[in-house]
Length: 402
Ligand SMILES: NC(=O)c1ccc[n+]([C@@H]2O[C@H](COP(=O)([O-])OP(=O)(O)OC[C@H]3O[C@@H](n4cnc5c(N)ncnc54)[C@H](O)[C@@H]3O)[C@@H](O)[C@H]2O)c1
Ligand SMILES: O=c1ccn([C@@H]2O[C@H](COP(=O)(O)OP(=O)(O)O[C@H]3O[C@H](CO)[C@@H](O)[C@H](O)[C@H]3O)[C@@H](O)[C@H]2O)c(=O)[nH]1
Image (cartoon, helix red, strand yellow):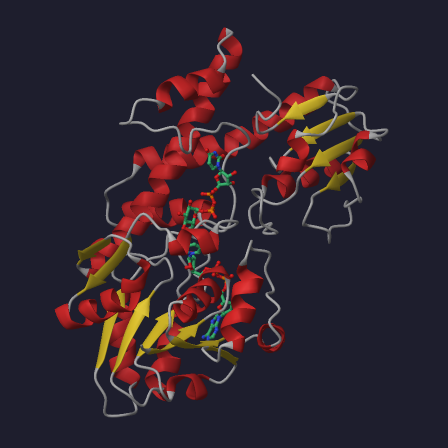
């Protein structure tokens, strides 16, 4: 079993650390955020993710999972160091690599063993090369370093399940031995492994996310046409999805995609296309269609009130960008709240997990009572069972039947 360090304890770093320790490795997770590390040490996860807390506590108690803010402490025994820091969108649309660059410098200054560095963050093609360069330029100890790309495919809300039962593990390595070591690390998971060079591995991640985002934008445009033509998009999606070449997954129409990945990753790959003068016109269109979908929904609501929502009470069911998470990054709810309040509406919202916005109320019932209209924004199971009979509902996720 191997001694591993993980830099970054967000969705990806924390889940990676917990799962690696669950399959027998000894893992130390590092984060700069002291408050986060203190709560993690007590077995409290800062994010809402089904079964994460239980597994985390189990691993801490078994003595195979540690947390620290001190890189040196984490690296002293580590043979493998994962980088799982954020790669947010910068103003140009490109991925902001400043956290990655800082992590590479931290590694260079503080590792003391021959180490394999695994880049798990979603990064533009060529970033693993950059990480290797930064490390070798700043390396203090006389040690060997290999950099391996291992993009992550987990979904929020299913993170633990996806890590144990992923469709594939992608390992992009220039050194066969380093790639073999990472493959062995994941061996107990018994998930099919795809071996490539580093640049292909980096591309697989962006190409997969952009494809899924495009699939969503595609069905959303079909849904808009269905509405005008008397077709039922859910029947259409079922009929299309039974063709195994298409598949039913990611054909759920609605308000479009949000979250911390699709919006920024589609922008980042589109940016690369422009940078390398190979425009990704399909992805560019998917991005535009996604934004249009939110606008269209907003305009349906405004039209219902003849363009004037001043003083109207608008109820909102769901705030998180999707069910089973508390993540609000790029959530359509935030766009809708801003646009409606700007026009003088009073928004009251209920989400089973997100409780910290000033619009939050305590129950579905509270949303339904007295609202002039109700917007279904996140398809939590709880809302599927709610009695909505007497309300004007704008169903942003097509959950209320065909
Ligand atoms: N969230 C997802 O579902 C998901 C899935 C697959 C891939 N990804 C990718 O994985 C990466 C991480 O995403 P996330 O959602 O886990 O990020 P996050 O923003 O939730 O967490 C990143 C963490 O890294 C810490 N950090 C930053 N720089 C550091 C440093 N130098 N040393 C120690 N800690 C540092 C931050 O304090 C933060 O806690 C991104 O590239 C993202 O695109 C995310
Ligand atoms: O048929 C669908 C499926 C999803 N969505 C929306 O798409 C967004 C993303 O959903 P999902 O993919 O389930 O969640 P994420 O946690 O963002 O996961 C995506 O992004 C991660 C980060 O890169 C990847 O690791 C995952 O494989 C990829 O699915 C959400 O707003 C969903 O509401 C739809 O509108 N229709």
